[in-house]
Image (cartoon, rainbow, N blue to C red):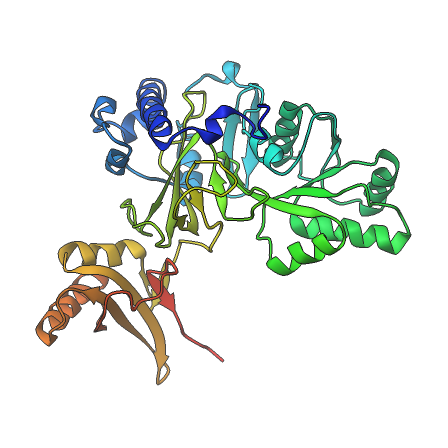
Length: 414
């Protein structure tokens, strides 16, 4: 920890310094994964690490979709060949919903949560009341190891047993809560109901579910400043809030991209897309261009808090928009295939509706060409790719909503 209020000097380095280190580390990660892992050896067979000359070149690397991992692991147990170490070299194995199995090493703050805790105001010697589960998933240990990296003891409360937990809070007087925002409210409500003093908690680092503005405001009214972090079991910390509440700052040890759902192509700054993350660590369980299935968008410029890493808006919904129309599935990948055939289209959105008790679909496109003949040509491509007829409407640039949706299901079945 540094003396200037930041976790370390990396948080305030120049963009050029950060990109140079990330580029060097990415190449190391790619080489390590190709040499040590069956899955990554196959996935990266056509990727030359030395050919990655800029971070933008990462778009050449195939995506690994979170939704595909359970099937991969079922075929090649236990880790789908993603591990880059033998079982004897691992320290932990976890199971997350899916199920997805992850491996971890006993390396200090392995999931890098110390940075998020520091930004949330945790300081050495303060007690953390950790309510994330230590059972099966790594969530509890993520926060546990992060708090201890800052120099703080942890009360491993886990989830449930609210009566017992409020008794412990009254007795131990922890200053910081870790867990989901809804369970923080449940504990404070239970403390009030039972007449227990839980006022020692004045800060919270939350995750695992969306934090609403109304709940943040309610907690502030009860004396608790709540900041949030975005993380997954596979990636560890991805981004975190600071006291300025100006979006989430990406962790120094991840490379975060925002891509068009259904593709691996980055979108423009400010445009909503799917989070794709590479962990900058050549360890036992490499994670490279991991498509999370979560939507976000980059914010312009650095944070006013002085940290210089890129910022995101936070979690903005799910990217998996596969929809069944007339008994057949339509996927974001198909919409991207239509765009690939017609480079005049800069953005597309398939709208599915219900007309006269029948499914109908209309492809709305922002395009540099707007005549009827072009619309007819795109409609033919739509039918060729989806095997279903649909209309095409040409929109002006910027007319489609910037919400990351490639397929919008507007059907009502009342």
